[in-house]
Length: 289
Image (cartoon, rainbow, N blue to C red; front, side):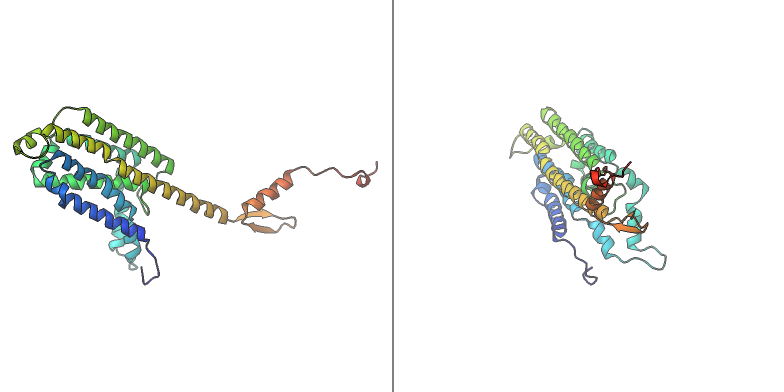
């Protein structure tokens, strides 16, 4: 890209580095270390991997960067660029990235994970924990991709629909957090009670703190998603306005010669002048009867 003279925005590079750093911290830092013994730290790891990291990675536009950097095959074969386009426009991915499906997967995965035996399996086995991390990272990426993802996508919902999907999904996400806070059931009680931990908060206090974090930590990625959606919407409207103004319009002059008009304001004033009735002639110019 540099040899071609193309420029990649520094903000997207910063988003990618921030997402990778957050993912590394959540899986190998304090949340990853203490997430197996404290429910509150597990929630921090979960919300970081499932909500914050996908938003930063989507804003970085890695698919767009790959399509710009990879070379197009000219021999009729399929290279990395062609396979990437095939994956982006695959039928199953088109289904998963529809607005209702992506929102339902994000909220449904949260409820289905904590209120089923899947939570205990993820806490007690390494394979379950890795699958949990990969699942929530993928689901969160698809949701953020639908809301504000730049570049090629399987589906392109309108911006009002994206805004409605974001509001509805986050409302259900907050409802799940509130319902978790109001519940008295100990999530993963068989696993956490078996640890016989003698330090830190009690099991009930740790559960309440974790449920409060599950409700509150979802607001920060939503703010980033909303800002990214607003910026993408404004840029799309500006591009559409420039495209609309630059589109040639053909009209006919008095000499029946076509003239290309590019100014909508001038065209509007001309049409109004032609439609408006002509002023009456002065008495001296009237035709005698």
